[in-house]
Length: 93
Image (cartoon, rainbow, N blue to C red; front, side, top):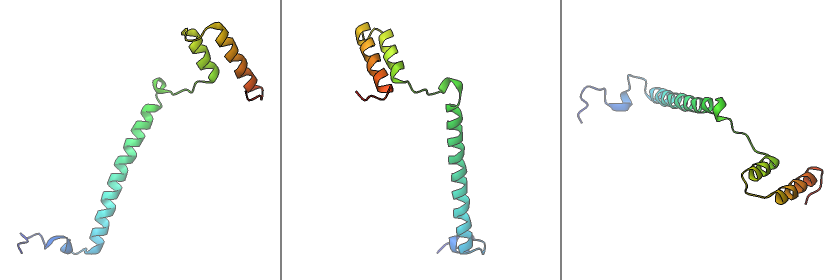
C-alpha cells in the first residue's frame, strides 16, 4: 500500500487515534450547527421587519372586506354580521 507519507490514513491521525476521530466529528457537528443557527436567525430577523408582519383577520374583518369589494350585498352583509354577533354572545349558530 502506498501511503505517500501521510501517516497511514485515519488510524494514524497524528497519534490521536479514536480521540482524534471523536474531536473531528464534534468539530464538524458544531460548525454545521452554527451555520444552521445563523440561517434560522437571519430568516427570523427578516420576518420581524415592519413590512413582513402577519396579522390574522377576524371574521368581522373578512366580512367587511368582502362587502367593501362587492363580493356580497348589503343584505348578506347584515345577515352575516348578525350571525357573528350571536356567536360572539355565546350562541353557536
